[in-house]
Amino acid sequence: MTHDLLGRHRAVLPDWLALYYEDPLEITHGEGRHVWDAAGRKYLDFFGGILTTMTAHALPEVSKAVAEQAGRLLHSSTLYLNRPMVELAERIAKVSGIPEARVFFTTSGTEANDTALLLATAYRRSNTVLAMRNSYHGRSFSSVGITGNRGWSPTSLSPLQTLYVHGGVRTRGPYAHLDDREFIAACVADLTDLLGHTRPPAALIAEPVQGVGGFTSPPDGLYAAFREVLHERGILWISDEVQTGWGRTGDHFWGWQAHGRGGPPDIVTFAKGIGNGMSIGGVVARAEIMNCLDANSIATFGGTQITMAAGLANLTYLLEHDLQGNARRVGGLLIERLRAVAARVPHVREVRGRGLMIGVELTRPGTDEADPRAASAVLEEARAGGLLIGKGGGHDTSALRIAPPLTLTVAEAEEGAAILERALSSL
Image 1 (spheres, rainbow, N blue to C red):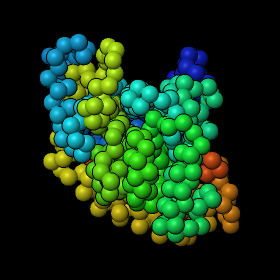
Image 2 (tube, helix red, strand yellow):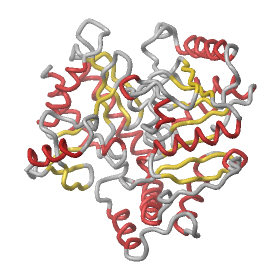
Image 3 (cartoon, rainbow, N blue to C red):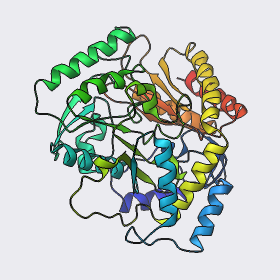
Image 4 (cartoon, rainbow, N blue to C red):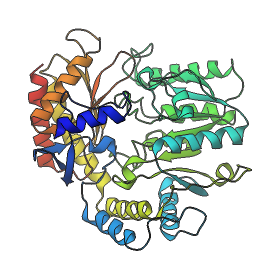
């Protein structure tokens, strides 16, 4: 049955729509932190639909909210008053940290970042954008144009002029040998120099932890230091929280808060986890920025009632059960466990991350050369052992991406670490 489905997939879907595993997997259902395939095999899920099933599979509170809303009304568009959308916007505006916040809902992180770019360029009357090397911001025409990861950038054509800044990767690049203070100073000097050679940009867009790039991040405080330089010139700061938001990093509710010395960003984008699998994305911005557009705009499916019901239930559950605290506690244990494993595996260059957002970078033993074949091999071995993980990386890097639902238990963390240890040891 799976082979038949694979043949049908290849017959009607694009060649570039990648599938994991030599024998691709069909997931049929899930519960908690586990999923089952079409053959009935059970897996511990450490990737959550690419960080999207943030809370748990088949979470009763979310399933109930979706079912009840589906029984009343699925959709009406933003042309009509929408109580669930207003209620979720109120909740998100409150937790965003942005003063006088306005919220606009989309259906994905790509569309959220696209909207943020529209707002920033319109507000600043500039189509120049600063972005980070090794970054990923989506698959639309404009978001591909600011993505600093060649593996996810299929065209050089863009409506934007993009300038790439140092700093998103701590342990590689020309400043890797510096200590954290010197690293930040060098990146700020690079940014300042760059701004002297170009027309005033609209914004800097940055992921606090680079997701597709392999869960890399700068030292805490880098974007706060950047913001001082940007603020002097009126340049906006967009924090792409599509993967880092809602407490996943454990230490903070938003990834930008590790760099919050100068206050919140001007614009925050979000998606993935807030819907726990439902299609929700969005933008939070100061009112003067959000309201700067001088033409009509709507969202046919952004803010639709059924997704808003899911988001409300999911956010309520997350806050009432302190899933940020669970990510900090269980994630901390998992990181230390994986670091102990890594010390015995020559292929592991680094275990990094915070909370339940963990990257394991793989290289050829004794070198700094990426080893994507090793990453694929570990992915396969982990699956054989009953564990699903992800992979990523940017320029000359290969990394495993570990991001379980935020309700992960200590016992499940230990189980997953043991499976991953066996998979890594098989290299």
